[in-house]
Image (cartoon, rainbow, N blue to C red; front, side, top):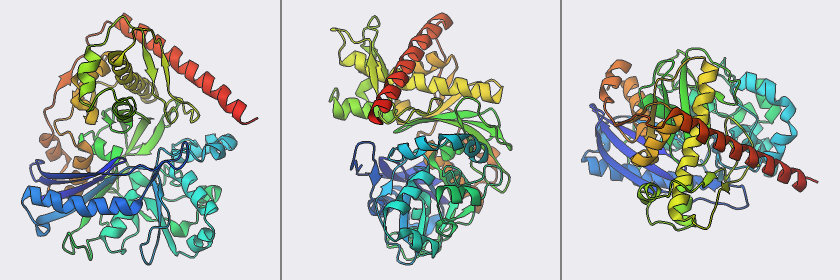
Length: 501
């Protein structure tokens, strides 16, 4: 039995075929165009996203040497918070999708800070441009006639999972899963259903929203596709970070993971009841394999792998991201260079959307190696901040951090992460934990795997990194980092005040 995972990310789409042992048999990937129409705006072409699925799925099947008829189920995982709008009847995309990184609604969020407390209590989130509701509100307000069409049920909206499932089912299904819905600012944290008061606050008609299902559920079956036969069940859907938590088999309270992709995303499973953060983290719904509620605390670093891409493509310090490892290793340890890579704002636990990146401690001897080291350390410092905040919220220790994603190929970075955490870091045996989590959810639903314990047995192994930095040195480095972050926040807050005068 085989399971197909469609992993639709920020920078690329991947299709992966797994067998019943959890082994990867075939993979194909397609990069996506990033559109930046204005400073702080980030968009994707949803039709290009769909075409990338149409191209990668048959290529992955061919590499696996199987046909679509041998697929038992499809799992979908996706970049969260990104919003698309399409015609419910024709499926035609109405505008470019607004990406989770987009900051165009910063002023709207700033003007309504007084509503932050009740929104946090109702949703577990913060009022920030990161989340879907402010983007959807902007689209409905800026496009003539859209609101009326939305209220009449002529338009459909959703995160990318909803869009892909609609296309995969020939327009028959307008659905989402509870993890994606929990990232919109429109879902009640405790009810796990669309909240009428939230919809009124953000001026989003209920008629435009998809139905909310558990992460392992009957999302529909394939219809009318050139690259897959009809009637393959789509049985698993989860937002990328919750899918990665599931793929890392972190099913129980106290288990955690961090995924290093375009950004870095830390999740700590908290069990069947939500824990509201007192430290600027988010409370979110974890992947639900059935109707029983599951929750997690989450923190997001908006720029992680994207910072390495900046070194490669912007500064042209090296030709491939892998070269950042040897470059960082060669850095002069006596150079005091420190980098806060907040290109698109600071996320948790600070939530300063106006923040921009800043470099500290430059000298005449600062070179490419020091910039590479400072960039990788800047990501690791931010993740360490998230873990410390989550430990405080959960009032419980975090025994280790499970990690996955592209940056986990960098051994120097993972040792640095362990040193700055003071905790063991355990790299996933399967690098594609996000896709694997979507496959696990779909396979559980259709019986490829019997239970969650059987999944744990499939994911053992992986390299472990124990911290080897003295506690006094770690504390000294953390103090330096926190001074730098405070300086960035103070500078950018003043800059925002000046621009608003």
